[in-house]
Image (cartoon, rainbow, N blue to C red; front, side, top):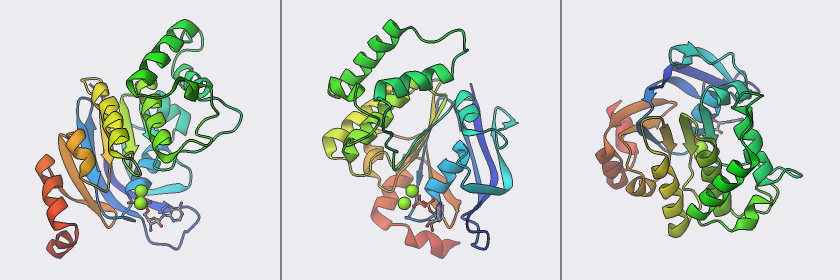
Length: 252
Ligand code: ADP
Ligand code: MG
Ligand code: MG
């Protein structure tokens, strides 16, 4: 079992030193075997949290810590965090010209393995084929340049393809449901649910309860004003669907 611990995390945007902190003391512990959802209104710092955990240098940690199995990862660059088991499925996946999807995924897998033990090409292609079939993706998407000209739904499906191929210990999935029609949503959820197990933990960031009908979380957190203001079970997401977030502020 692995543990991802976020302790009293305060974060500023490096380019805006005079701007108030975006994260104002986030506490959260995620263990492999668990799926946690983070919900909350727009602009409350959900993407900032996932980007900071992954090590995006645009964000500066001013207080607190992020640890994997008790070891701080804050001094590690993104690639080292990936090797430590983290994966970020982004709200806005980047397009990369000149690198095919398959090349990108194979490089990402090998970057997490020992230099003298790359995945065999046969094994890689078999797994890729099988996983793309599971996600109902057309075979030619493997040979297209990464995310270039992909529709919003294809990009999100592709993030799940990467996730299933890379098999990280912890996946931070930022609004993987945004812009998805119901069929794409079902497929994306199927992929995440197939990852479920004792070796996998996930933080699922979503603005809407809908995704959580398909991926039922063990724990639901509500984020507002840059910190977690409420934690509960799946029923918390359902009650938010009815009441919205505004009443929570009143209780603070
Ligand atoms: P959420 O994902 O909950 O919608 P974000 O983390 O994207 O929220 O944003 C939180 C706040 O921080 C917003 O006010 C947003 O404009 C600001 N912010 C986030 N990242 C940046 C950035 N790189 N540059 C400037 N402002 C940012
Ligand atoms: Mg947002
Ligand atoms: Mg966001």
